[in-house]
Structure formats: structure tokens, C-alpha cells
Length: 240
Length: 240
Image (cartoon, rainbow over all chains, first blue to last red; front, side, top):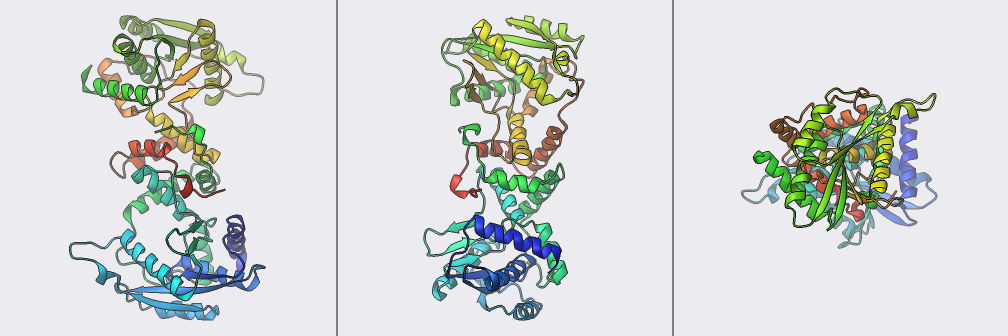
């Protein structure tokens, strides 16, 4: 799988160990949109399933919405099958759930799909849900939470849900988007599915550019920022 | 003093109260470089000294170095005198202290001057030192500490020193640089002294631009970022 694949595999292994993401007997539901991130996640989780000393099972779930009748879906299914992946497709009419006067937005749609994942996991006995968020997603959320919510907070590599018997894991936490792009190219995984017709959250796009300019000011800035998120020095933060 | 002066006075008052910066009987040494920030600080501390319900005394201290023979110093002294300010000048040969093979840099020079302030305060019975750092300085330090030190930390509005009987206060913590620039213009305080011949820390300049682009993505972003620094949500920060 090439150097970049090996590097990603190593980073995923590191995150799994450091955050204690996977335990013996785990059944993991991986959310597979068909995009480069979740396909990279699925590819590597399948390899870990085969080789990892800790025994676990992973199954993919693709949520199909009523606003994306993407013809390329069958290609995604072919690729997953070629990897020997166990996966399921679930149809969720997101558009139909919008109440009169409401408008579609990223946050709402992702909450709808997240709830379906949790319900599916509960119904089919999965104790973990793996999501394809990577280091850059976590950094962007951190910056957005600072700028628009006045909070130092982000998505967690491991989040035990309070109200459901399910733990969310993000095995790509140490992997940079740029690495995923390179890996996906080597495997031809880019553009397996159409982009969301509603487009990306525009604030997130702006914040992404800002982090990119920050990263240009030195070496390993993304890695430094990631470590900073886990290193609040409370005695050197101003009390409100 | 105009609307901008009143706004700054209000913000300084808010910071003094919220952070409990000034207590009855305090003797405060204000570091006065002659730049817009410290002149604004001195101007407003003098007014508070005259009007504040809590009684305190403020005295300015200008540290003159051996690399800035600025002809405009006398203008700064004239302005301070016209305000009725009590102040002193101290000569510190910073350049001469550089050991062979060492190079001048912002961090080292400011440490030299900081130590002189602390020594002067101890010798003359001051229990507080007021510095002219404003909100943007604190944000820049926060971003630099994230990107280059992998830490969530910044300069504090109030810092009680461990090893000296002195507390550092930053009454301009709530004031934005843009506000100081506008105020300094109305009073003709800009360019009273020459800029440091060694120039500004270049990383700080880059980070300043990055924060400016962030601020352009919405309303009150600087204020939000400032509040975020005091609002670490530890359960939503990744453990290292």
C-alpha cells in the first residue's frame, strides 16, 4: 500500500493504543459515506481487523439520503466488496424530515445521520461507532468553537455517549487530510461519490484557510496545534 | 477625551474590577516605553488614580536602552509632565549585556527590561507593575503558544509572581489595539518615540495577520477568542 499507506496505518495504530480505542470483542460500526476519509478509515480498519492482536469486528454502514442519487454508489460498493468488507446500506429521507420554514444545513443533516447510526448500532449490537474525522477536522472544529462559541473544545478521539450504550471513536485523529488525499490517490478512492449538493459549511472553509496559513509559518504546526488542544495550562489561562 | 477615550476608560474599569487588579493602598509602577500602548495605559491610570473609589498611587518608569538614542524622548517627557504624571527614567545598557556569540532578540531584551522593572519596584516599595499589553497581545501570545509551544496558555491579566513580592497587572486586557490606535491619534500619542531598531518579532507579525483574517470571518471574533481563552472545556479536549 506504499509508504503513505504504511504511515497512515502506523498513525491509526498509535491513536488506537494511546486513546485505548479498541478493546477485545468490540463490534465496530464504521460510518462510510464513500468519501476519501471514510474509505481510508474502512480500508485500514479491515486490515487491523485481520492483523490486530486485540480481536474486534468491523462492519460498514452507508447512509443514503434522498438528496443524493449518486450514480457512483455502485462503484463504492464494488470497492468495499473487493476489500472483503462486510457492509450495509441504509436509506434515510433527510430532506423529507425538514419541517416547513426550515432550511437544510450541515449541522442539522449530520445530526440526523448521526442519530440513525446510533439507532442502527443499538439495534444490531454494535458497541462502537467509528467516524472518519481526521486531525484537520478536529483542528477546524477547535478553531470554530473558539471563534464562534467562545470555547476551548473540539471533537474527541474517543467519546463515550451518556445517553446511549455506544462509544464514538475517531481512529484517524493523528492523520492529516493531506496524507489521506495522497493515500486515496494511490488507491483511486478520490471522487468515488459526488460531493454533497449543498456544499461544505462556508465558515469551516474559511477556518480551513486560516489554519493553512498558520501551518505555513513553521514546521509541524498542525501537530503542535493538535498537542496544544490536549495541553491546557489552566494557571496561564485568564479566569473569565 | 472623546467617545473612544470613554470606551477605553470603561473597559479598563471593567478589567480592574473583574480581575481585582487594584486594591486599596496599592503602589503601582507603570512601564512606559513611550509607545501608544503604554502612554494610553498611563493616561488612563492617572485619571483612575484621581477618581477611583479605591485609593492607589501610580508612577511611570521609562527604561532607556543603549540601542535607542531616540531624540523624541523629550517629547514623551513633556507629555507625561503635562498630564501631571510622576515618572522616572532608568538607563539599562541591554546591548552591553549580550555575551559574545549571542544575538539580540525580542524575548531576551524584554526579559532584561522586565527584571529591571521588578528590581526597581522592589527597591522603591511598589507592590504592582502595570504593563501596557492589550487584548491583541494576549491573543497573539495564545496563538503563538499553541502553534510553537503546543500549549493552551497566554499572558494573564493578573499574575502574582512566585519569586518576587510583586504582582503584574495588565489593565488594557479588554482593549483592542485598534481602539488604542484611534485613541492615541486623538491625543497625538502616535510616534512619540522611534520604533525599536531591531524590529518586531516576525512570528508575532505573521500570527497577527492570521488573527486579523479570522476576525474578518464574523462579528466580535476577537472578543469571542478572548472569552474562549478563559473557557477551557476540559471534557471536550483530547487527553494527550
